[in-house]
Length: 231
Length: 329
Image (cartoon, each protein chain N blue to C red):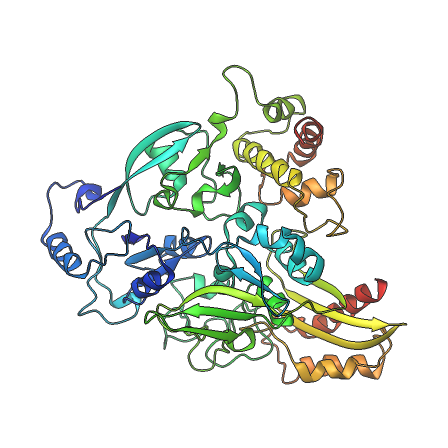
């Protein structure tokens, strides 16, 4: 793992700016041995006053990482600002994962990180160096659709389809949570074993995935159908 | 989003040291911080990622309570068998918040540190003393339906958005920290969040760089645990008003009651003096003098700002509903 300081890369102009050299020099003076990762260009603390408005702006910071995407090790170099969602779509061309609101409100970007459903728009790619990510592209086995995909087709669990990859990945994560016995807001008894997946439970557990076409009745039917198969 | 450098220290002490540098911020789940960074409300120049510090376990304490590592995810805390059995109000509060995806990512310490959802804090075109001290408060004369009715100031009427923190307050949790110097301290949850006063941008008693390492719960608090949340839709919405209550009753009479409120103030709102009014009263008697005394105590000094006037009667009704739920067993 290493950082690159390619100050001008994202604005299209070549070379290293004076400011980048200044920052790199300052960072070298403040390196601490405790870090397993360390930026070559770090903030200049000496003359700055607290408060974000007063901080000097940094040039873009880049970092090499490895992600295990759908069982394949993928090496990439990203700007530290890159969300996992943008790394998937823009760096790795895995465009099955959708960008809806980009603020964690719609669930269209849901992927599984180390098996757990997560909004890919609200986490940074660099935070997941070395971790396993499963996207909608990784659910099917070749031409054999995942049972959740089959159920969404069978029950017509979508109209425009934009939220569907997120709905399906979220369903996969949600069913795993049910299998582990995790309760929900509508679970009556916190200490009883998780009961059958009722419509009420499905709606509550899937409330982080919005569908503007409002295909909810069919989404619930698809999940109810498949929950017996995979749970 | 503004550019930032990134590091992942190996120890809590190293993280606190790195985070004490001007412009640095700690990041754990990131579900609130990254949202604010995209909007350039938060503009750190350095991020200190604490996700791999191993502070993700829940352990028994010597006094019969639990120590919750700061990195325990909200979903895991809500699902922990010990929490479900002995601290039901905490499980319920966590499950009432956010979505399945967010609860998988959001952490215990991060949840306490999440920032207000005041519309004007989010709108960089409007004045906000919390975002930019000294610029004024657009909510005072603005659309303030979600805003505070107790503990506010003429500088800020924002509310704290957390459900979990309300349950932590009713349980008398303690926040354990380490600072950049390596010093450790314990902060009672009552003293952790601050009222806005003249410094609404200072939201907690943490010092720069000070890192939450864990949150401890005392030995189980007996009684019925209830979390009642009123919101604008059935799921995945912030509280308009919420009540965390623990009611110990026998033969229909209250022995003791605790109650903390969300959606009312800049911090989880609890008035211990009001709780004693309920002792000895008939459980579920919302028309009695004891209930009125308790509700009046909670709402002492309450005032609306126009659009949020409805919250004051809503607090009484939500408390009534919570006590009825406790009575129903």
